[in-house]
Amino acid sequence: MLKEHFKLISGTANRKLAEEVAKLLKVPLTPVEIKRFHDGEIYCRVLESVRGADVFIIQPTSPDASLNLMELLILVDALQRSSPSCITAVIPYYGYCRQDKKTKAREPITAKLVANMIEVAGVKRVIMFDLHVAQVQGFFDIPSDNLDAIPLFADYIANKKLKNIVIVSPDAGGATRARSYAKVLNAPIAIVDKRRPEPNVAEVENVIGDVKGKTAILIDDIIDTAGSITESAKILLKFGAKEVYSFATHGLLSKPAAERLEKSPIKEVVVTNTIDIPKEKMISKLKIMSIAPLLAEDIKRTHEGLPMGVVYEGMYKKLEKKVK
Ligand code: R5P
Image 1 (spheres, rainbow, N blue to C red):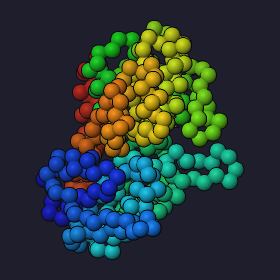
Image 2 (image 1 turned 135 degrees about the horizontal axis):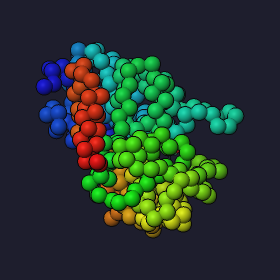
Image 3 (image 1 turned 135 degrees about the vertical axis):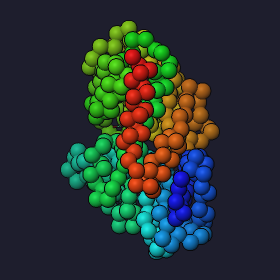
Image 4 (image 1 turned 45 degrees about the vertical axis):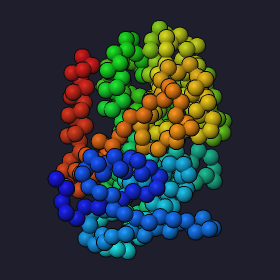
């Protein structure tokens, strides 16, 4: 049961997800007014008292990343000037996360910059979902949760009862994520050798590992332009894979992702609802799985001071029995 001083607030980035979470927690969303001035400036006001409350704001930085980030910061500012006991930012998709290190001279590290901005605004805890790389958690000096979709996707994959599967990472950076899925699903892994000559351009030349005659399960954190997974799918088939499925937590689906996915040999593309996908991008092979139950459970446990690890352990135990 949620205690009295609990408030759940939604920004405009993914209200559908926030409503789903609110329904599961059996609490109403605290009303807020969010509007824009003619020059694009954002205005936010919380429409009821939050004095002494444990406040959770759900706002992924989905497209438009900068706008949604700014809205989150302004909402936090409005809240922290209203004496809540704690503000938790629930950021199901943490944008600017891919720029997590300098790969060339004079580049920024936006994953750290954004973490600083969130803390300075007044956030005391963050809940995120499948960060591009887990070490971004260390960019925050406040408590942070990095939930993941592994039990959700792995259960879906196990239920499909596919034979002879291989878990594939579309690049070396995703190998740790792929290995986690491979462990749970008791399957081998392979890695696509992807290069990025420039942002949003994916070049693939090689596959490390044996995919011949196997059903390849591509695992990624983000589908942005879909260059990485569609090029990966093509090379996997060239290297003898029987068929390709793809799973990614965050469906950014920037242009021309929908078109690329539609034309690609991938049989099914599964993403979560960390990002609200507009109707025009809903191609027939796209399936959306909800992270709302996981988020709701984590919010509830954070509020009540209970651990979340046991929830994941329970899900993994059930999966283990299914996969055996
Ligand atoms: C990159 O390191 C990420 O994990 C994704 O692979 C990437 O963001 C996907 O981008 P796109 O769909 O544009 O290839």
